[in-house]
Image 1 (cartoon, rainbow, N blue to C red):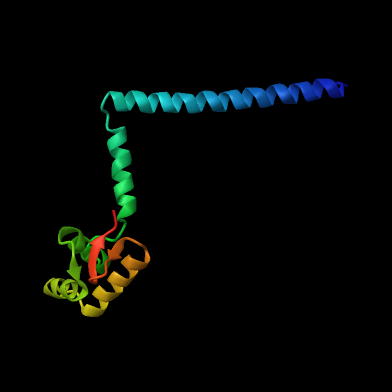
Image 2: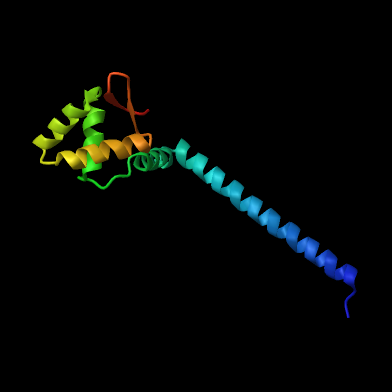
Length: 121
């Protein structure tokens, strides 16, 4: 039978090999990403697009999406102006006010002292 020292030595060797393999894989991924970026393959553009979609992850055409887009296009609108703009697009007042409340609660919109809405940057 093998001695305990040999078993411990084998386990330590396996741990070192596993750690080194993980390290090598990570470095390989980083090098590949840098090369792809330098070559202009769009890796960085894809990451930026992912960040933007994370920032604005509303269902397209929903009330909250429409309100958010309106405030991005026309910054400084009052709540009444947002409601009027959304009524023109067929969105009910209650849905607009709920969207404003949720956007403000999620800190995606800022309401200043004059009670005008601005997107948070």
